[in-house]
Image (cartoon, rainbow, N blue to C red; front, side):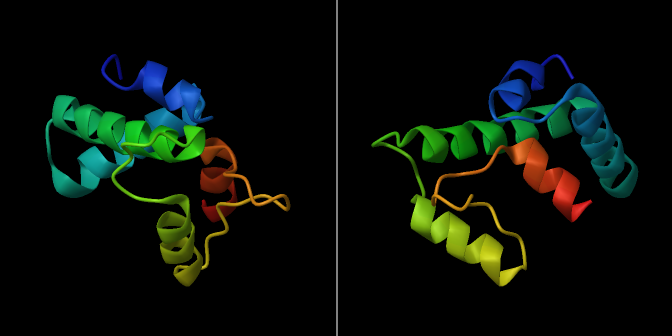
Amino acid sequence: MSKVAATANVVGVDFNQLNAMIATVVATTRLAPESVGTAFKTVFARINDIKTGAEDAEISLGNYSGRMQSLGISVLDTAGRLRNTGDVITEVG
């Protein structure tokens, strides 16, 4: 939790959502919680790069939103901006 909490908060994932995500992944994969926290930190950092329009982001908003839409998950709001990750997780969960 200590490895990812700040990054999760920046992209809109609250403490309870993060706790549930980490617990689910640890229970399913049997990976160490520290490894799972580091993995989520990387994922959230990349999502934040997309959200802020960082020029060195590894994936574009169009690519990301298109892939998520193919899974039935809408990550863009009505204005075409990236929604808070916590809102998306709540909708999917």
